[in-house]
Amino acid sequence: MEQRDADWAPVVDLIERISGEEDLLPSVVAGVTALVREVSVLPPADIAGHTRALLAAATRAIAARRGPTEGELAFVAELGVTRARQGVPVEAVLSAVHVAERAIWSRAREVAAAQGVRDALLLDARELYDDWAEAVRSRLIRAHREAHREARAGAGPGRGERDAALLRRLLDGGSAAALAAAEAGLPAGGALWVLAARPAGAGREDPPPVRPPALSALLDGVLLAVTAHPPASPGGPAAGLAGPAEAENLAAARRLAVSALTAAEATGRTGVVHIAEVAVVAAAADRADLASILLDRYRPARAELGANAGPVARAVCAWLEEGRDVTAAAGRLFVHPNTVRNRVQRFTEVTGVDPSDAFGGVNAWWLCRAWLAPA
Image 1 (cartoon, rainbow, N blue to C red):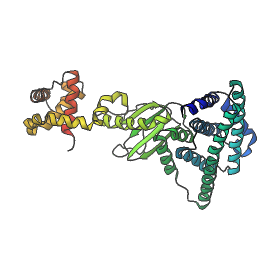
Image 2: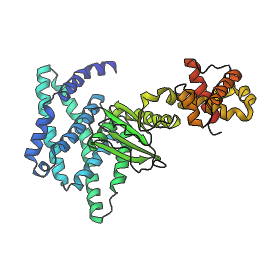
Image 3: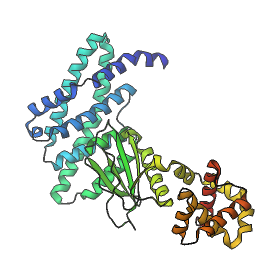
Image 4: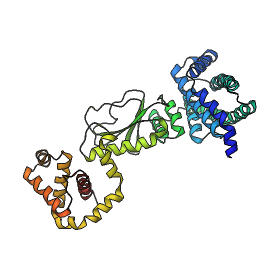
């Protein structure tokens, strides 16, 4: 296997060089629009985005010597559906793909000759591509025809359902996410941001305003949006933000955005809150095992506080979250400042944790939050 990988290295280098040529995509798009009349009416950015995504998927498949993945085929199906709804005949779609293929492989032959890549290797790569492309064309044709039948029957899914399905594919990350980004009009190879907000109790049905291009939908009870630009923080209900991240890493960015939202709500933050602003809080919230250890370690202290455990914990949290400002914490709790001082002091006495210390403050906040959490 090591020898085979070494033999295949020139092909991988060839693919990377061709994919990195800045003039390749514009020339391919120009050729497609010039030769396929039905496609020429589409926006150039639309054609370029899909061409770029298909090229990236094909080069990954050739480099890995494999067929198309389900994620890649899902993107192809979405492309077929999109073109059907745009009124582009399936024959024109296939012609556009063929024109693009011919231009790209012509460039590959030129570069291969200059780099000294053996003809046999280039032929092997082309055969792999043909196998990949055959599966892709079959899925595209099937999806296009199904979408056409649904449109004639008036039965296709609504825009909201399509956006939700596309957003779910995008936020799954991996190689399929780059294809989903292209389908959504987002930069597949650029920096993306994920925004998370609550649909209920927030007084809105949409996430905070984001600049296009963007894609948003309600997934698993959370309003999520992926955007090419970081949104501003206009105030209002809390929203979690993570990024920048490439499309392939959006699964992790989604988790971080939701963690940022939870941390912002826990600390009373409003507006758009980036995960970096609440990293410690988010980390604490994600470690239920350590929270359990804290609770076990300080169970006697809580028992000693008895009915005062709740008021003491709220005072410690408010004091720390207000920057150790007694007056601000008292105003937040509607008590006298001396009450806050006494409760913080009582916490220190029974736990031995000094919340005025940097690390002691973190442990104190975490422990008190655990005390206040629902059972």
